[in-house]
Length: 200
Image (cartoon, rainbow, N blue to C red; front, side, top):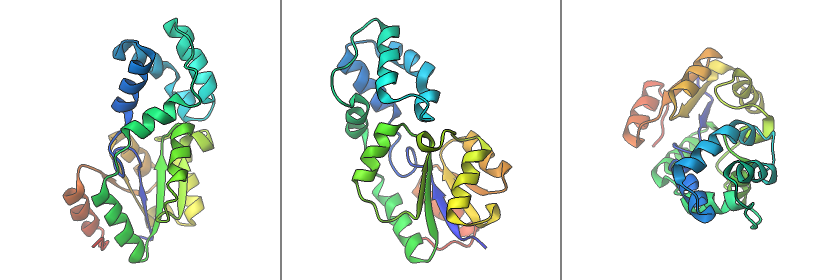
């Protein structure tokens, strides 16, 4: 019996912010977008796992790009906010699932500045939230799935996770979780019904 539905954040609950963030930061720093993205990829893993702070991230990026470190408090948060677009139709599904008695979780590979913005929204739809930067591990590592399962007090077979990346679906399956590769609202509703989950 399914007891919990776990959502990815970027790409499922909100439009994927990655390209917008990279473009925003590159424009602010007056550097080429591809060059900024190349440097970002070097430090993405440590940033998303909370191994380096935003300050240290910009120290490294600035050194690699040969530019001055951005003077503002949190350029990454500003870039995230500028790129943030909620998927209202998916939030409606979340609300319906919660009303229908399912536990609702979020499991996301996310940088610390973005999580600050998330908590400022005061969402009341989610029972438990696990962000990679807070636990030092990221999808598709099996440990992060086990963390959210423990927080929700459920077994793997009692959960359905919804993610837009194939490797994260495989990671969830590897620990025994049910998983849905997200494409769009209609596909999600249809697949939830396959699990006999009422989302309307």
